[in-house]
Length: 559
RNA sequence: GCGCCCGUAGCUCAGGGGACAGAGCACUGGCCUCCGGAGCCAGGUGUCGCAGGUUCAAAUCCUGCCGGGCGUACCA
Image (cartoon, rainbow, N blue to C red; front, side, top):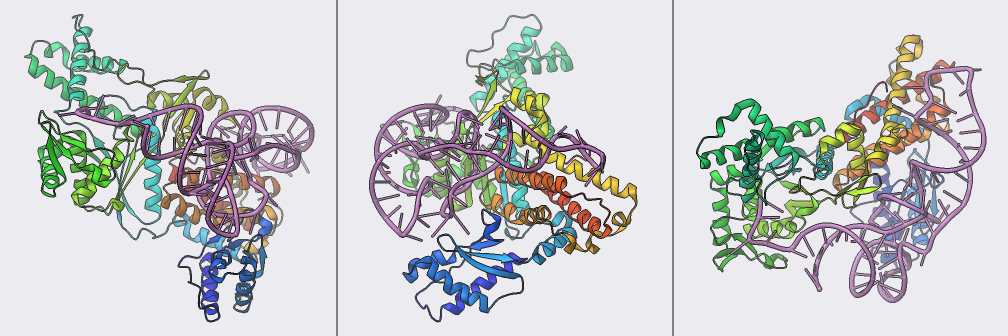
């Protein structure tokens, strides 16, 4: 790719300059960026400004010198070099690079945009991890798409990625028992027997639904068994049904997990105990008030945290330590956790615990996405699980569908709040950004159908054979330029953990395509030109499919 | 109190050291003999929350303040 060649040229030029300028350090990374406007060239670099302070010279003077060397070393792609603004070196290329790039898209097909940046390192992305005592709500949905798309991106840049859902199913946890009791109460109520849902239980509608499911399937047979047995039965059933339901909704949302990891399995394998023992042995714990504490303050936490309660039951933190240790033991080089905003406070202590146990904090990235607020009739709808006032992902999917929901959840950066206005999402469905991008794809498919029905030369010719130099119009060049940006977009979105950047790219791509479509008739009289445009359109379809594929949004052939 | 996130166009948000700060929505006016008008083109608006500092260069980094959100349990 040209980018590579240009960077090499710059690097080579700087190396030559070093003879005259011994005081400069050659930067190990050359920034080659796409300028904000076309009249500033195809690519630009800021090396002159970076070196200015070392040379103690104004950036533009430094730039002049660099340009002089670059010109002498020049490569055939470069038409001219300009210095602009505070000291940018702007490179203007002749169009051959656009044709080379377009051809490479046609040859690579769906492999275009991939790289081996990750060099096959194993990454585990853990996300959603909703507790098995309630339905998947919109917050989980947001975390879910962020995780899913991030995993797609990381895979595209050469990591070996697994997706995991952590199930907080520890039998000792109070929440699951309360959930079991709540279900039990509903089960009795459905049979006309008076029994209260505990005050601190779960009051949502969905608990009644599960109770009904159980009653329909198994009848009243749990009514008369011993209470202890009934409670454990209901706790187990509650969890099983809830997980089943969660899995179903997540699948519907396009989220698949390679592994559903059970917290209880850690307890059964004594991993939680082991983790606690390790922390003890390494001297990062102490006893106080009958509880076992982790010295998390040694790793920047505000206060030390309890690992084992005075009643002997380990805390969530303890199993989380065991869980993360287990992930490392399974051979992952890097762990990424995506948490909801309610787990904010756990970042520091979890990382502290992992350091205490001996892992580098660099190998664990935890990031929290901000809340999703649902607006309905202009009013904020608040979610509270205990009160049963939950906005489920299912409702949203029923209302607006998978593609729109995924797209909307990804439109904002993960650390920005997201207002999801249900009415707006539906009402806007005519001029919705999702449809805008999908429409570009559908239009292309329509052209290709038309071309193959027409049976002209253009339809028969392999696009790789087309004479691309026929593409000279501004709209055509803009489109080729945008297509060529995909690899960089993927790389940046992946390495910065910024899936929302891809949304922007998709919209921009849609925009340049629609402009091209209006400007240039693809199936035109001039057969040579028609072939070239058809090739361009095919490449655009490929790039749209790749982009939408990474986002998990459909690329429909007709709408 | 302490910690983290946010404060950018009328609204919702990008940009997170570099070029005159961008996009969508909304508003106004144009564009269908011809591949799908779910489209295109044109129009303008900003004390980048405030005040200092670092830098050749700050919306971006640092400090303080103001406003909003979320955390801050021997809950999960």
